[in-house]
Amino acid sequence: MIPRWSLWATAGGTAASAAALTWAELTLPGQPLISDYALVAGGLVPVLVGMLALAGACLSLAYGLTVADPARTAATRVLLLAGAAGLMLSAVFPTDPGTSQVGTLAGEIHRWSAAVVFTALPVAGWTFARGRAGAALWNAVRAMSVTSGLTLAAYLAAHPATVTSPLINGVAYYGPMERAVVLAEMVLLVTMAVAAAGRRLAARATVTPATAMPAKSAPAEDAPGLAA
Image 1 (tube, one colour):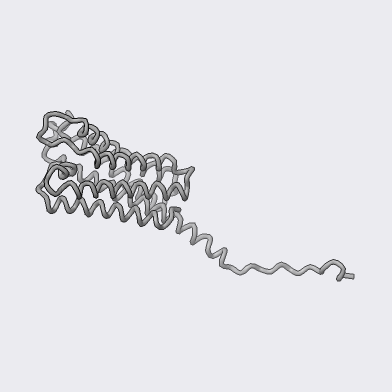
Image 2 (image 1 turned 180 degrees about the horizontal axis):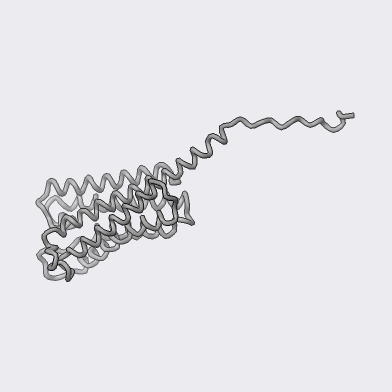
């Protein structure tokens, strides 16, 4: 379905994003949220690389779907572009420090851009798999879409800004839940690319045997004038 380069670009961008954010987690002082690493010494570069690489993965998959199946994937591509735009805005506009009591304009843009990313990708996965046959790859896309959505709901319930957080002691684990959301959506993005490429390969496998069979020559007809 999608070109092979789109599959590898999506997988490579997602892997680069995961590697950059893992580097920040392992080498920098622990922070409540991933975006907070950009505010400590040495954390800006890995956070920027992580966000922009994941935005590139969204764009490469969206472009691959445009080439392969523009009509059926229109809604999915819009959501992928929204996710990419949200990631780029989150990279450009830093978050507010966790100790700050004043929300800056940059911090608000970052916060709402991240909200777009977190919600757009699970919906993109669901719209992409909607109406497809019950094959294993499409079921995997559906499962990861639901997993991403449920993980996001748990993260929002635990976030200190919500009314539910004090009821469930969300401050103790809302940071790990955010990381779980990011990981689930990375896996979802790669699963979507693999499902799209898998459909293309299956189509080739179906067509190849038919095209490989030698064509039977039609019986020769007597040329006009030779039948007499």
